[in-house]
Length: 284
Image 1 (cartoon, rainbow, N blue to C red):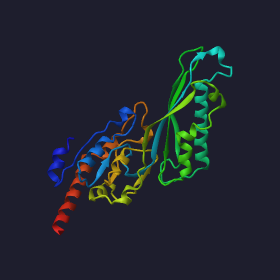
Image 2: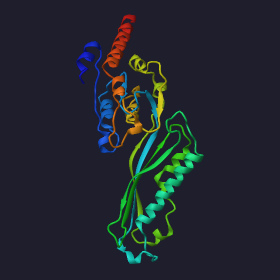
Image 3: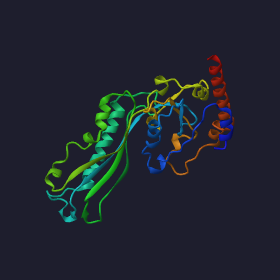
């Protein structure tokens, strides 16, 4: 923000800044800003989406889907745990978790891979699980979240195996015999992949200057960039900090990364973009 007066003084066109809050609410994506831009009919030359990329240019990332599975039944005293009418929600939830683990292992071992991504295959992972009421009580519920990331243009079979309907299919026989037993599936998040943004529409001189002739990379996870790509804006993902230390205690951004995208670099890029625009205007 301290550079705004200098940037404004050297540009024929405005530069806008916006901050999202996805990390604070579980990275559930911020769709409001891109939709607001689209509804206003704003014309943007480039978007620079900030994320932890170690100051590398990211032009593609995987799709992501996050689901919640809620296994439920009617609570009962634990003395009935071995009867035919017993249906332990945590027991069945654990079997579903084990099934997800086996699917994930099979995809890594036998599925398609795309080694240009930092994580080459489809990823399945559990993130949250809880359930039960108290000891000596057959659990009334077991709730867990899982997500999967699929590289763009990968085999469709991977997506089918990751789908919550497939994960929760073939219920155990005892669940059919228990009154009130069942599984509720909730889709918390589903966003498309960002693939090869620079191939769809070449970025302007600003983005070209930022790459400095370096190769662009593809991310093994996902970012908010897909939301902006959907409205047809050329973009790249770029920012200090490494994804390897993300979502951990004492997460930090190395000083050298801050220096790498600091004042001198930004001002050099701004001047290059200004010179390019002046040249284009003169050519007209």
